[in-house]
Image (cartoon, rainbow, N blue to C red; front, side, top):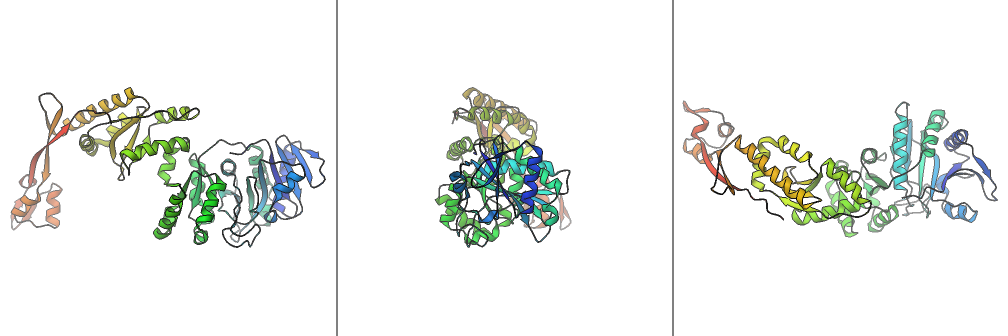
Length: 462
């Protein structure tokens, strides 16, 4: 996360959008000129404007040159123009670097140090302030120079033609976003896949509690090797990777997963990221590690109550978690009858629960206290029994430790004995509908059988 005490805004004088943004900044606040032998400099509180004669993309080593001239920066913001053939009215935020040749500044196969949480704050501000304008706001994939910077940096841009570069409304929106800049910490991802304007990554940053460092669209992926991917993770300070899966071919995805896992990172799906929302990655990751020991393919889901408790606990330490379980067959049978009723019970409690790869409830419950874990398991067991009792014929054994449930089910063998082979008529019977074959009516009762399932009712601790 960026230290907000020294934020340097770079104004490129040949760039009309850069000049537009900085003019709006200077109109909005009382900036004081700062005597400097190297650059023309203005300062307002934590912000410093530095004017340069060259173009932004060719400013390798700029942070070193600024330091040598007495200008120390925790974050460098390049206020810039965005050029695009489509002529879109657009405001963008991105980091810089080259995955192959350095055609537009920087150095070949070198990535700059991104400012993920700063980019997150700025794109959210731009999105919010664009609503009543004709401009749209988006993140962009990593591209162009400079790349040789040791200070966190980003580009914030106005696009895409001369008209937009000089647009007063666009200039004010970008200037406002810069002046409003503040940031909270968030888990950081390296993004892979999609187009240049990375719409899915932008949506996640604006809607979920994460940030992105470097983002590589589909057309850059063929140039990525282990060293470049490692560079992206380290310089981004990333916790995990995210794939725009719908935009990527399976073989490309598998190859990237292999490299990323070899480097020691995980790939999170969008559903995982949204579930992690506002929790620290360290917290989420340690919970996930414990869960995987119990169910390798299961996904964790949080109720709002436990999410708030975990957010509070994250500030100081990662709390111990307790597990409980109920009989999986009992839960599965009740879920098939009335899942929403089970959800209502769960949502009221301070627990997390697991879902299998098909989105069905796992029988494992998670809480921060042993008492809560046990209590919810017992309560959920009783509710599942009630659901089953209302829909099936049931009986208890003598000590009520087992529940016998009479279940009617379709018997393929009986159907075949009545001359019905597998096919459309077979399927109709299986769905509980009568059929006619050779002038004879076959009703469902003729091909259904009753079986008794035994379900254990204990709530053993895991």
